[in-house]
Each structure stands twice: as structure tokens, then as C-alpha cells.
Length: 387
Image (tube, rainbow, N blue to C red; front, side):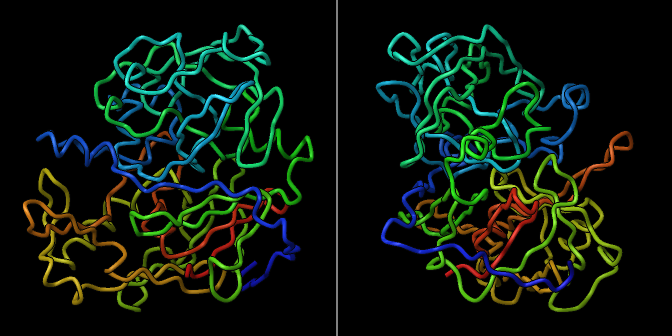
């Protein structure tokens, strides 16, 4: 499908975009803990896609894989609706929220779903462990009405937390996670997106993201619709190569428009709204950091803020089209005491000899530059320059 440029023919009427959910760009767990003087360790982002045994052996925790997530939006469960802020995550497939069954500190600082307050709740008596990290978040399943924007999904299976150990999730601004990956990654739970598709609740089987760099309002996720006002030109489509996550093939990786040997045979890559940055294999990352003259510190990969404009542009070729990511996109600036501090949002992933999984991840740094559409009908991902 190289070079395929295609536009979804979605009718735009006065009712268009009724299925949009506004997203907030808030402080991440890492930022909140940093303000408390706690510097959280960086973990191998590829662990998010590993089997439970590998995750447990790594020592990673559920919370550590979401230290840097900062886009979240509203979802409600029950009748009458109980509202929660959740991460909309294309890198996982399950829906769960904190519940009254959980009395851990991480749950007690968030909104908790109370089944007794909902007239439409029924229990499934099933239990689960969410393998976001070492399987340390346990809960039970139940069925209830889920509302997203104007979409009402009856009898959707929802995970309700029972134990959620860990202190760092205490400062998280979200009450749960809505996974948008394929059902093969959801275990026994049917993903919310699949329920909407099967019940005919959306016109087109797609979900689309516009992620603004600004901390102000403007970011959104839309279900069954594409917001043409949020991008320029046409969507470039590329097929999903593994229907578990949103995994695609990157055809080349360029630094300052100079082709590299990496990805000459294609690089399998995750497109993950639940990951904040761009992740690359350790060998590529070391080369890139040397080129950028960046050294790791406890606070990340720091650069001189005055030198940002001299840093190279990184370009990913997808579907035969180049998608450049300038330094203004991958360098993050924060202020402490009025002084700017700049870090590079490029991180390494480590290989696993036992599991052939992608070591490239295009997270929010890339998706802030490009409007993205995740199409379940044709199993493809579309990108176009974001306005």
C-alpha cells in the first residue's frame, strides 16, 4: 500500500462531530512527582506490549508505564451517569476505572464507581489482572451503560479496580483507562470500540485523534467520524501489520533528511496515544543522542535551550510519504523558578530475545504533529499534518 493517499468519504452535516470527546492535556505523573522533588525512573516502553511473565520478571509496575501520559477525557458509567476522567489509549484494549471496592491510596484519591448507585449495573462475577506492568492491578468485571459524548453503549463490560497498590498513581489526573486496541489484546473483555461497532452505534468504524501541543483546550478524540478542520491536505494510509495493537511498518528513518540504514527493510512500529514520546531501539537512540550531543540525567535527556533550532529534524517515511518531526516538536521546555529547562522526548527501548515485538513507538510527540485515524474496517492507520 506504498504511497496510498486516501480520504475517508465521511458526510459532514449539521450533526457532524457529535461523537467528539474533548481531551485535556494535564500534568503527567512524572511532572507532578518532580514538583515534589521525586525523580521517577524511566522504563523500557516496549514492556507495555510484553506477555505477563516478561513484565513480572522486568520489575516494572502498572503505574510506571503511564508516568508520562497527559491526555485524558470524560467518560460516564451507569444510570444515572457517574463521570470519570480516563486515558484514551491505543496501546491497550481494556476499559477499567477505580471503584468503591478499592480502598488503596491510589483509588481513594480518585473518583470511584459505585455499582449500587446505578440501576443498570449487573455483575459478571469475573476477575481480572491488568498486565500494564507486573500485573499488580486487580479487579472484577461488571456490565453497565457507558456514555461517550452522545454515544450510549448499553451493557458494556467494565473493569472495576479492587486493588491498585503504588503511591505514584495517587497524583495521576485520571481515574482509569479506555483501551482502543484490538480485542486480541483484551483477554476475556470485549473492548468498548468493538461493542460500538457490533451494535451499529457509529457510522464508520474508526477513532481519530487531534492532540494539541497547547495546555489549553482543543485536543479531541472522535468516534466514527473524521474532523477535517483539524488537518491539512489528505490522509496517508498504511496497513496494520499485526491486529493486536495498532502496529504499522515505517519504511525509512531520516536524520536531517539524510537516509539511515535503520528501517531500510522496514521497522515495525506501534502507534500509541498512551505513550508520550518517540521510542526507538537502544542502538539507534545512542547514535541519535550522540548526534544531538545529549547526555542522560536523572531528569531525562537534557539539551541547551538556546540550541534547539540547531538540532536535526527526524523524518519517518510511512505509506511512501515523509512525516518530519522538527526539534520544536521533540524538545520539551519546562520552567522552574522562571528559568527554562529543555529535554529531548526521545527514549530507548530494549530488545527481548524471547519475543519478537516492535522496538519503535510513535507516541504523542509524533501525534501532536499529525492528525491520526485508526480504521477498524480496513485495518489501517491514516496520518495528515495537524493544523
